[in-house]
Amino acid sequence: MLYGTPSLEPVDKAVLSEIEDMRQDLKYRLAETHRWDGQLRRQLQARAIQGSNAIEGYKASVEDIESIMAGEDPLDASAAVAKEIAGYQQALTYIGLLSRASVFRYDVGVLNALNFMMIGHHRHKTPGVVRPGSIWIRDSSTGEVVYEGPEAERVPALLDELVAWLNEGDQDMPSYVRAAMAHFNLVKIHPWRDGNGRMSRALQTLVLGRDQIMTPEFSSIEEWLGQQRTTIEYYDVLGAVGHRRWSPHGDTLDWVRFCLRAHHMQAQRVCQRLAEAGEIWMLLEEQVDADGLNTRCVSALYEAFVSRRLRRSRYQADEELSQGQAARDLRDLAVKGWLQPYGETKGRYYQAGPRLAKLKADFADRITPLRDPYREAGC
Image 1 (cartoon, helix red, strand yellow):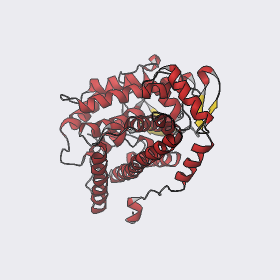
Image 2 (cartoon, rainbow, N blue to C red):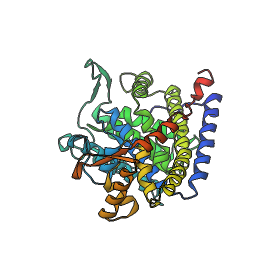
Image 3 (cartoon, helix red, strand yellow):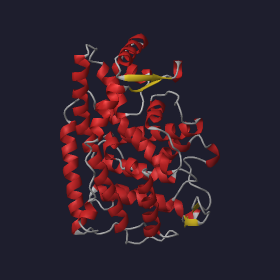
């Protein structure tokens, strides 16, 4: 028996309606191709990877994650963290492919494979293989056991039940609700020796992707969950709804509401970023044209605008340039005060120079605060 999907109340249906409206707006805007789309998608995926891994204590900057995604060495992240990031990125890439696959059914093999992709570098943890014994989750600060997973002998049957539900269960429920319950049940089954939290969050993204809600980078709430305050709330609601031991019941509305709130807030954020991307890009085009620079330089300035730093190799790959062309462009941007170089040779990177920093500051003053739909409804 799994944890049951709750009945929704009018306020939940209202929040779902608003999420759907934002999804349709995003879908409409993404239907038209823009030059900044590729960079925006990459940044969203990097932020999702950052959020999900930060929950587990593996912290890396968005810029380092983008470097790892491109197969490059990060500037700051340790080798150990880089392996965690690379494994998770591989799993998310596969989830993106599975989301678009014309033939697909959930099965335990797919879940095990995703777990292996995430933690395959920890061979001593038998990645991709169901745990052979008991498992406990402890509070990292006190050592207290906060959750005990179901007995190992029950796990195969519970996974089979979850897979059957993923394929056939609660088909009349909204996809956001089904995805939330997939996340909750998998994390409570805790079937592997490691990677259970990341796997559960990734499964939530896969469910949404398979239901064609949005491409994974636009539908994931992992970035939202990775914020420090939200992470604390995430663990609190998992504990309050799931209790200290496997005890399936139907009282899971608080968990679903937590996820719907996260989807609503993250959707607002993504809508803002998409709108800002076009405005920023066109503004930078005007500036580059006025300075007599090649219009392709906008790509470099945009990356430095939305991120903390830019590497030559990133710009070179985005614009399909030779190393010499990319280096000359970045040197010209630095001379004109748009970029500021730091470091030498392979460690060199660029941050916003005085002129770009001023534009960033102007935009920072215009950010609209996000609104909590449940708080507005008095919940």
